[in-house]
Image (tube, rainbow, N blue to C red):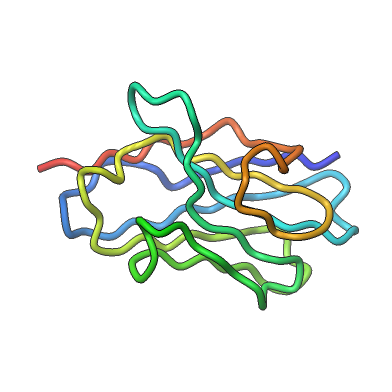
Amino acid sequence: QVHLVESGGGLVQPGGSLGLSCAASGRTDSNYAMGWFRQAPGKEEREFVAAITWSGVGTNYGDSVQGRFTISREYNAETMYLQMNNLKPEDTAVYYCAARYGAAWSTSDMYDYWGQGTQVTVSS
């Protein structure tokens, strides 16, 4: 199993930047992909934000964050990052870190392990 802990959430003004981190522990010696999802207030589903492969070379992004957010991780590293720039009020959500063994999917149902979430609020 993989245990995930997010950090770095907070309050930021529109147009500002914020960085999130996700630390993994447990069975981290195997090939596992990681991703970020978010759940906005009043919405039931978690929206795909970004995902990254085990090697860190392969990434993909949700349409709403493409060009503004950057996902990264060091090769074989147990920490993943999400750099968020030009934040908008609609980015306000609880951001979740997720992991799965194998490929980096953009569907939340494909992920087996989840962090507890960190709140990001974009407001003036």
